[in-house]
Length: 239
Image (cartoon, rainbow, N blue to C red):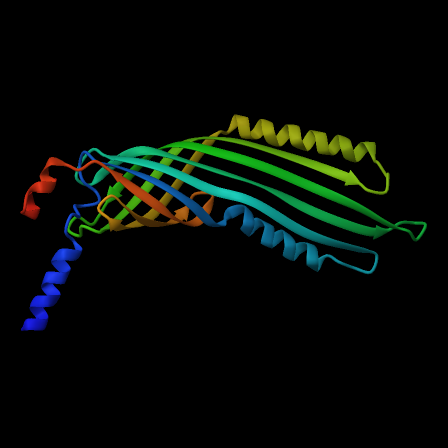
């Protein structure tokens, strides 16, 4: 009996000062990092394809250097279970393909192909919250729709001065076409299931899984404000 009473007092003390994470009239700021990124997955496929294409006359190696994606989120609870806000993220990276082959004079020629990209999404975000009774835990689904600002550039380094005008023409046409396509179709969408865990009454960690330039993301959140019902003692008053 004494052990049960001590455990009960400990639990009450642990939740002292905590209100619901998803309360009407409060806001949440999130900052996180995505992993693994969609571009990283594409890079793995390309790396596998390059390694399988080697033969006696040519060899190739592939590398990828990413930045991000970095995520910023803001949600404002307009109701007991519904939040509206903003979602924004940034990602960039460089794909590098190094290709070597033997020419007709039995000399080894080396070319390097670079593909750079950068992308920023700015979207309106809606969240639906499922759990309302736990003061430290918030489980939700989020969906965002907005615009993206993306840019790509393909470039080649002819390391043996074997410049090919026709190849340069193709590169210029590719860059022009891809960037025009991004401007013509600027729509961005994402959707995630998420969970927040409060470490203090105003801050904690979050994890989301879904599509948002990455398949998962982990980060920190900060809660802004408390509803007037926080000071009531009965859960039924929470909106």
